[in-house]
Length: 401
Image (cartoon, rainbow, N blue to C red; front, side, top):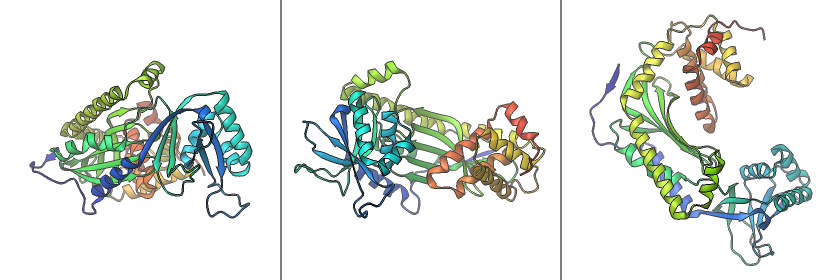
């Protein structure tokens, strides 16, 4: 059964001021951003050692600079982040590890190769930069930029400030009484997750208390789409599972015609396109806040509790194969299973699909912050496994180590 508490005005902030600090940081970053669209023939490469490195010392942190060459004379050296350098490898069609090795050990050849491909296979690119410190200045041209990403000029820019502008007011005014639960904000991604204080209920078994949740995420540098989705929190351990109810908008469409059309749009047209996406995301936040979405997942969890496994170790091994987990990741799921069978709602109960859902999402509690979403999504996949795959998990026997 789902419980809906009375509606009253509320703050979505937590006691640590997490959201306030996030909004202030994103506002500062927004003022420091600058995007540059250019032809690769107007770019040069100059790899320099990081300031402070001893001469001759090999260091994987050597920075590649993109030289803006607007008039044939080098004007600015822009430090390239490791992530942007990996994108550079994709742009020139070279294996990432190979280009990293060239960057570190054969800098002259690295620079010559990238420049040759830039010149012989020209394309227009979007350079996403941000004002930073320790950026070399040439010819008295002041530049403190660093390169965050090198992307196609067809990349649809929808930034973190746009995502929050589209969703936060609706979140604050929601009947679900959202409270910020988790937040990740780094140079690649923004993920903000909320937990409802009003929409709660029992999940798989009696005592397995759950709460409805909301996930919003974005990447300004090509590391993910714009997403608004549902999350389901197990209140005992605050594991989160991402559901299938979501809005996803890619920054770069796979349809060539659409991408080429976007590239020629005026700034006014692109702004209108972004505004339409904001309205869509706002409506999805409202849709996800409905109790019916939460009730459907609780029902699925109760049904999953009746789908038991023959051998718990064999089930974990089979699940690891289906989800293509590494051995350490499969071990994390097994550890999560041991933790799950000791929590309320699962003590003394047979190991089931619902148990395995919690075992997978439990792994997020012992991983890096940028891997939390990965485990939450896997939990949702387990709950909705096709029947043939589930049967292979349910009937699996443990294999010898």
